Image (cartoon, rainbow, N blue to C red; front, side, top):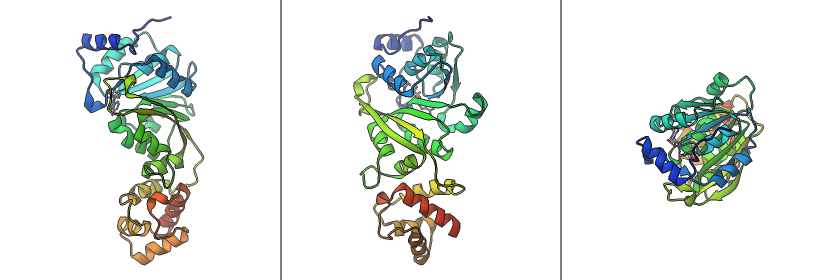
Length: 289
Ligand code: SAH
């Protein structure tokens, strides 16, 4: 079997970076996994088999990527940092089943990338230890593309993980939670302390699994996504006031739309379910857009 350095060993990792003249970059959220057990646990939860198409965001020094490579997965890894990308490229040279794409993941349309990379209909999975700085915008982009994966196992800062799985009335329920529960069934699988990373981040992380679910909207979906983001702008205000200000509507019109969606005008956005937002989007789309 091909032997590659164990980058989950802090000593090996530091040595490798040094040899390539590299240092962890804070602005790209570089906190590398240095715990082999966590890597195995994450991979186990993704249920990877040889030949499986997998996209990884931010492979860094390759803690997850090397493990996927050894399993024979068909990996496409997207990395923004050219320095670390070059290092990883040479480490993973023995693996023709791994491709590296040096690009900003926020500038990628994943639906297009999947179509260009894998055969039509391939069940592509997503894996990442997501840098905190991009987690929110990255997830919004995925939802705008209709979440084109069959499964995603993602490591986030705990707070983002909670936002992705919370429901109406929870303190961290917001636009991201509504979109996440519209597109996916999500669960927090386990939490990890900051000691499994080098350098150590300030807060703990959690691993989330998202699987796509059947969607209830048709043409109105893009409109719904914008609307959910717009209506949480002032989360302490009533849904009526949010409708009036976001759509620049007369009060009467906003009241009419809410009544048709069976939503009380005095309700706060943070108490509305995904089904209520979907209904409101459908009605507003058909009556106002
Ligand atoms: N997966 C590795 C590294 C995690 S650190 C591990 O678990 O050890 C986060 C990685 O994401 C870094 O390699 C960083 O350079 C990369 N990254 C940060 N922003 C990115 C972006 N916009 N697009 C692609 N990669 C990004």
